[in-house]
Image 1 (cartoon, rainbow, N blue to C red):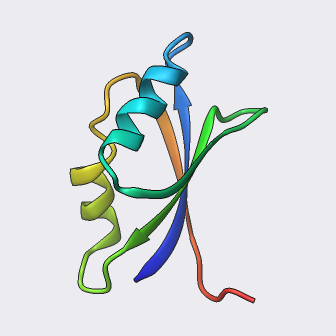
Image 2 (tube, rainbow, N blue to C red; image 1 turned 45 degrees about the vertical axis):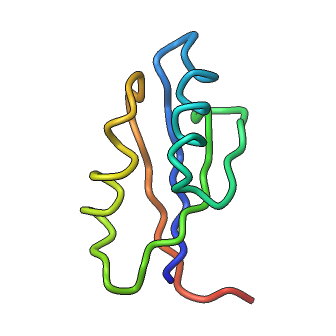
Length: 78
């Protein structure tokens, strides 16, 4: 499994709806609300045999009311 972090900017007033929809898909390991430029951050484990972009697009990015995402790839945990 490969770990990535995904930050979400939501349509104003829709953050809790987005969070619920993401959580209900059972795709993320952890999901937090955040302050600043982004509304949510998720820790996602991608299967080793999956393409990261396709996996996220097919399983996560079609959630309604997401206006922007930022995916951070990870390399090594210390």
